[in-house]
Length: 205
Image (cartoon, rainbow, N blue to C red):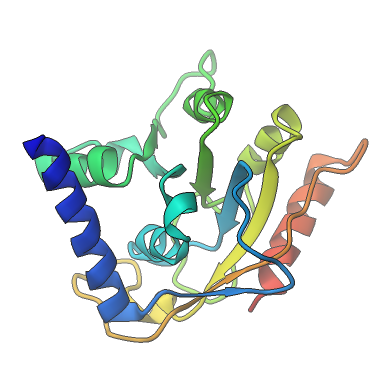
């Protein structure tokens, strides 16, 4: 009981702090919040990205949306582990793997269990407003789970609020823009799909 109260208190504290620092105001562009299973994919320029998107989601959707995070960073240290595993319920992936391993396997398991995901297709943070080219993970998830909705998201100003290397955030208002769902087209090539998914995020700038 005490553990549940601690997690709940931590969640409310993070929600309040994120809203105070950057706002994380949601804006649904030609779309509306959907309780269906989704993969939210977005640009990545700050350590605040995950928290801002998570905060912007409606409560009932947030409860089943699991951010995807790097195990080598969020799996180290008691505080980071607590936030990642208990507060945010992250799916941790190993960025160091052999050719015999599938780094997407934890994501497949989460989707098979009915969870939604928050992912960053660039793979790492970029100190810029526009997202870089997407890596192939989003394509493989779309191919394996065609019934899951793919929701593009754009996080504005966070590349200036807390860029890579910053310790404390600069309080700038961030709007979290959600776009309409896209899907993998029949016989669509990976490169074409990833370019189209990136354009869906760019369109929300």
